[in-house]
Length: 384
Image 1 (tube, helix red, strand yellow):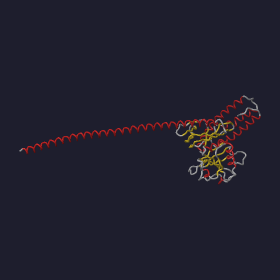
Image 2 (cartoon, rainbow, N blue to C red):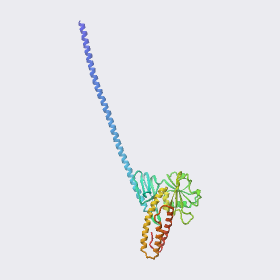
Image 3 (cartoon, one colour):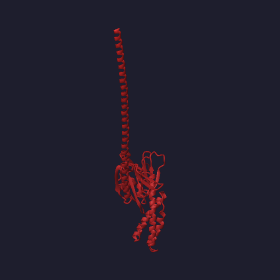
Image 4 (cartoon, rainbow, N blue to C red):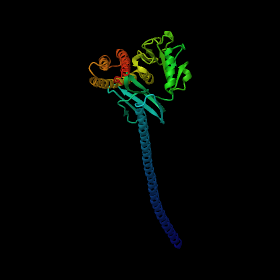
């Protein structure tokens, strides 16, 4: 009996121990679960903090980059404005000083020259800066160049009396190639010699265009010259762009020369359109066509120049009327001035860029020079 009771007591004790152990394990398990939950929450919190830090850092990085780009853009714009102001000063100075050559250097950029025939305005700009208007300057240049230096040259434009100054703009990587296949062209030699004397612009007699591949822009000039057979007057049309100059009279004539007046023809290789031609007058006008290398740009600038001519002609007309009124009625001086006023000055009014008007301007301007010389010889008031 005692053994049975001892056995029962041991069983009960064993069950109690098992119960206590199970409870202890359950508490431990609950504690572990709670601890795991706390750890997972901590991990999520840490991950969120890192994501927040990364986003905030990226936003700050973008902000710094935007400031840097803005400052770079502002600096470039300011540089463009400074360079444009320097170029404007140089171009304006050339309008007052003919026969001058200058250079201006700057950070490489796209320079765009525009002549608007609708508003009779010329402007230029660098890169994305706002264009600068030059309402009275007569400037001949390529429409667009990418360069770090501009070469600027000027020539007087006179038609009897001074009209203004033509300014020519080019770059160091440009060259004028004078086509002279026969080696006997009077006009080719005349142009080459004049460029040697008056400018520092790169120019050569053309042998093979490929010999000048180091020049980005090559302007080929050829001539309608009686010294050349027609087949030799210009390069092969299919292979080259060129400007053909046709003076108004043969070189053998004593009436006109290359720099008097004539026609320029702009040929574009591969173009399905007909070549475009325009008249030119004086050396200044001929160089305007060569440096423009574009019929549209050249015509626009010459139309502006003829507008300036009309303003000067009206001033000359007023001046002559005033001089005439101060002279005795029957004096030779008054008679000569009155004849000049009626036959030359009045017949030159409102010219346009047409062969008829250009021929008339050339003829009348020569007569003006003759009359002005006559007045000076006979101690009369000079016209200009």
